[in-house]
Amino acid sequence: MASRNTVERLSPLEPVYQPGLHGQSEHGAGVTLCEAKQGSILQLTAWPGEEKRMIAAIRSVARLAVPDGAGGGIVKNGKAAFGIAPGKFTVTAEEEGLAEAFAASLKPAIGTVTDLSHGRTIIRISGEKAEWVLAKLFAIDFSLPAFPIGAGRSTVHHDIFAQIQRTDNDSFDIHVFRSFARAFWKLLCHSSEEVGYEVQ
Amino acid sequence: MLITCPYCGPRDLSEFTYQGDGNRTRPAPASQDLDAWNAYVYDRLNPAGDHNEIWQHSGGCRSHLRVVRNTLTHEISSVGFVRGDAHARKPGARK
Image (cartoon, rainbow over all chains, first blue to last red; front, side):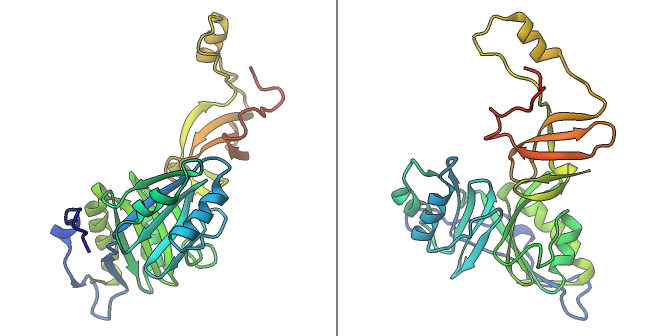
């Protein structure tokens, strides 16, 4: 959905992105992997004390009611938002132009908008073994009571910084730096081999 | 060792970066008090017990944290954000 002012975005995963069944998948795939291509990926940062006004701005501009609290988030209508740090939020949308919408309506006294649409890659893992595969890579609790739907977590796999949002019971979006995306994708595929995986 | 980040919850030590002794106070940039600068750069309490430390959750929310860690047992008795805490030092902390 490239607008006429922007160049077409190429996926960093393209050389290693191989749709189909892989690994031990003779009894079906334990997880499904794909790239979640979002037109807009933003980071919003509120100045200290302005967190509630930033949450209100996200509600009015992106139509997302982000819960107030550490790591709180929401997924709705192709858009998503979640807290990644005190006063900091990641907001994504399928369409481009969300950064401009925030820049036009967010008062500088509330906080800042950083457009990361070309700087992040979102990798989606879903399936009954998704928690199990991710638990091999990240030292955080992926169980549903500890990591509810919509919530976000900032964590790291060695030097690969990752922001993870649970988008459904058994589905997670992993935001990684674009420059690390191909290496992380290959790692995730390798980690999924023993449960079988399908690339869509 | 686990550090319970006030934002992220309990996380593995590998997500954190040690940023030094939390008892120091940097002299004003224009200060010409050489003793104060010397103390800031070189003097450390080196206690066998509870120690005020600064850590950053560099592999998480990236907040700077004020941590009290027991240097004998690695038990962590308190963790809080540095922000908002800068003017509320614990009694007995060095200048």
